[in-house]
Length: 416
Image (cartoon, rainbow, N blue to C red; front, top):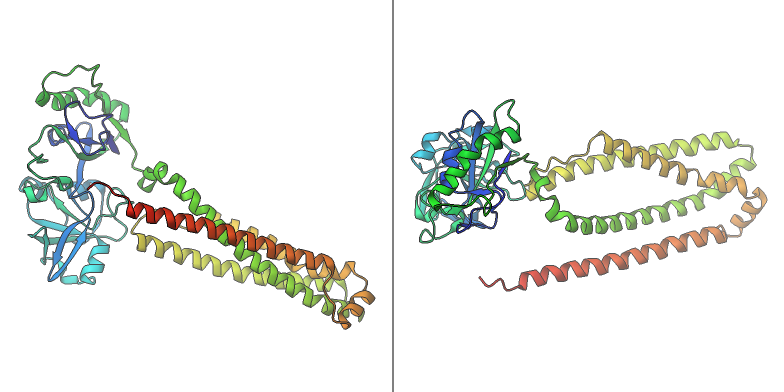
């Protein structure tokens, strides 16, 4: 569970995440409460973005974290190669590093001999001791981590990239910059944990700061389940809505193209059906034929679409390095089959409906004269084309506005 402290005390510094960040002395005090926690884990970024990294002669920038010695064991992360950290690595501030599977793949081409190699972080050599299993990107999946090191006392590797002249994480009582993740003991509820830890939390938080009034700073602990990418739902709600609208427009344009192709195919088959009915073919037999063709077309399209959806979902997760857990399941499959079946039946049987409604003599006469499209069919086709043009225009305008917004964000002066 993500540990929540409400707000940080007055006259302290933080990172902008005051509700989920704590000082190192608070972490040390709370981790001793083993009757409440089975594990209390700390993790903090090495910078607000990426940090300089070098392996061999290749310099690059990667996202890294300092973590407590029980980070991997407490989270239940499987180590693919080598070992994870131990409490001694944290207490001794050992210069060892564990790589993510993605970083190991990109930088070391999955070299099995990576264990023991040297990775330089801001010029300081670290020895690679492990590689995590695929699918683990850190506690915050939207900000995938490339490597982890034990909590460090070195000024060059201060948390958040903050100069040590301002604060040093492990020595400061007034810098609330350390996020924590807790695993409660079996049978302990968040409410019980808050009540049991309140005295310890208050003492550890206020003792270095002098006297604080509880009314001024109503200290309390909260515990929220880690929901992975769901924690970012509020931040990404509006952008996702805009993206879904754009995707829907693209889908509608593609569907319109398919409708036009089916209408053209249906118009071409009406003469064939009229001739077959004129020489004695029964409507039921034609119905079965068209139904079989429609089902076959739907099945092939659904299978191909399902395979592409599964492959695209996995490829997108690997490319974005986000373990969202999203994957097409049986509900998506049944919904897709239902929509595809309805579409196949409707458009597959339209030629038979038209052939039954129009007298055979009229159909054969119009077909022989080269005029096979009625006003209704022409109107339907024109309507589909008009809709497609309108949707393309809307998509073009929306895409242009999105690109313009991205350009404006890129040119924004952040004062840094």
